[in-house]
Image 1 (cartoon, rainbow, N blue to C red):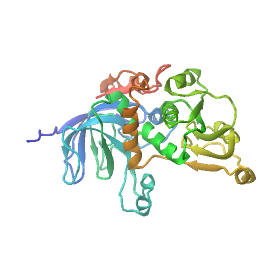
Image 2 (cartoon, rainbow, N blue to C red):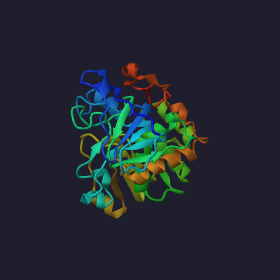
Image 3 (cartoon, rainbow, N blue to C red):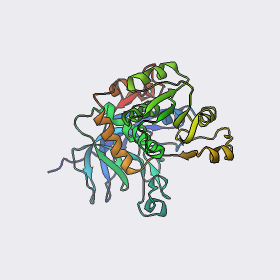
Image 4 (cartoon, rainbow, N blue to C red):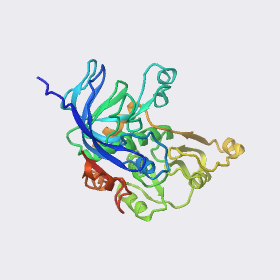
Length: 337
């Protein structure tokens, strides 16, 4: 007999001026919905941008979209089991619109996003900075193997899965020269993933501490020479222009960090044509990338010190202390509701 799910939970509600930890009711589950107890949530840089005013977001809302949880209860028509340890996609999609049918479900015409919805909507428990959240039908769910610690698995739901999507866009990497722009969690994960694929990986970052971390994940500091592939996670037009200028004949530039308006980039069409260049963008990811993320982290768990990148988790009541940039040598703070 399944355990009786709780009727209330606690959630850290972003109010626009701070976080208010509240006791809130848990709704009855509908068809296809899953109630999850959050074991650990990591703090993505986008949430730091929200609380510092650099990024607009629904308010009030429960932020947080990188987490590991345990299934507490399920609605009808689900394919997960109570007690399973899981991660879940950022996007919740309809699966039937033209974009979903064409393989671009990340851009679903009615997309909703974990940690991005209004607390006053019909999905108040949408974020991971809570003891429980509800996953609606249309959320991709991946089971986490026992061999993967919570702190290693949590970033898979955003950073690692996004990296898997950018690597797919970059194409074949074995034996190629790759430049990674930015050595945050996405950039460092990309360094490791590209090295794992057989690439010669360089990294650029204004933070020397982060650049130094690259050597522990299979990369090295940039030598300024030509590259075959450049992947940018910085969102800086200056960094993107530099990466574009370093592409060799047949090179590919993948943009993933340019998610807020910035200065326009000058692109010479003749150069693109004569050098056979490819410029593409990636925003969010598809279900396959979430599953690849779990597999990649599990496969490399003994090769790279993933667990050292996350600060020990604080309780939800101390979430304000986690909504700050991590100290040098760390890339994620964490909350343990």
